[in-house]
Image (cartoon, rainbow, N blue to C red):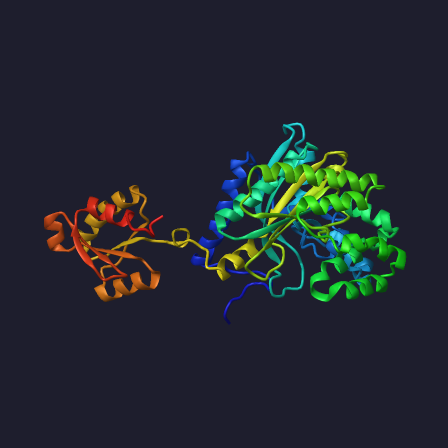
Amino acid sequence: MKPSIPKGTRDFGAAETAKRNYIFNTIREVYALYGFAQIETPALENLSTLMGKYGEEGDKLLFKVLNSGDFLSKVSAEELSERNTLHLAAKVCEKGLRYDLTVPFARYVVQHREELQMPFRRYQIQPVWRADRPQKGRYREFYQCDADIVGSNSLLNEVELVQIIDEVFSRFGIRVSIKINNRKILAGIAEMVGAADRLTDITVAIDKLDKIGLHAVCDELRAAGLTEDAISRLQPVINLSGTNAEKLATMRQVLADSEAGLLGIGEVEAVLRHVEAAAPRNAIDFDLTLARGLNYYTGCIFEVKALDVQIGSITGGGRYDNLTGIFGLPGLSGVGISFGADRIYDVLTQLDLFPQAAVQGTRLLFLNFGEREATACLAMARQTRAAGIATEVYPDSVKMKKQMSYANAQGIPYVALVGEQELAEGRIALKDMQSGEQQSLTIEEAISAIKNDKDTP
């Protein structure tokens, strides 16, 4: 029987891994440019760290790991016969796979707080696991690419995170809209219409304005239980349009009596002022329909949409006020973002934006014509590798046709032939596999020719 892997997990071949590394390395380079330090946390965390942090549904999606050894030794026959899954899991499982990078980061900050200099800027690029039902675009194992700044309330942190987003997508060549809103503005809207418990319904309905029109949006709000007075008060919000400055000016009037709302408007204005002064290459849009994690975020919130591909959010984040409170260290404010590597991969693939140099493997293959020739090829391969050219020496002295077929199958652009004549002359025959052109060159000339190829990294 052919072996397989668990549902919701994936193998990544060489080409896919090279493309994924291009994504991770690009994000990693930009994070480092902005002074973020990389940390890693274990795949396994104590269940006491994870449980109760993601709500009841989240707890069900945690992969729990059986204790080592005789894990049933502390379980009675009566407990086994009751078949109470949650109770049994608590007895036989003390560890679980991390569900996200945020809770382990909070645990890390509290555990190492004496060693950390605040504000602490960290990034993490690691896999996470969720016992979810696998479906298209949803996996049980996937990577997150998080960056957070904790221990500072300054809005300059939000500014730099927006600049990081702008820089990363500019490097990828993906045109995006970076959407910004503020939890305090949303709280002000709910306060204004007296419907704090309907905030999600309000934002979901407003988001449909372009698709279904004003009349249908109002019908949805009625269906959600809003009064006619509340819907009337929401009209300026539903019809909000214009530049960022014009939309914020309108909201300043609408929320004139809301202290929280005005504070949120001021925060968005400050972030936009700094970001726009630095001439971003992508659009920054104030978007009232953005309502990420209402129970989690407390200030500015961000979301990124690709402009040329129909796909969900490819980056998100925001300000939170009590990341470490769940572990007994209250009042530590932070702000963070997370790039969706899998969705970015899909966008780059659809738009054909992966650079050839990023996914190119071996650039040069030395054919093997025998022991004496192979020895010379190994010496020359040391020179080409020292020059930064990825090089292979074919290991077996087999028919030339088989070796050339290998080069074609692997997409290797250059092949070096070193036979008796080349050995005598101290040269190689360098064959361009795409054009079919073959030249007699010294090893130094061959290195120069390959490095001058526009597709060489």
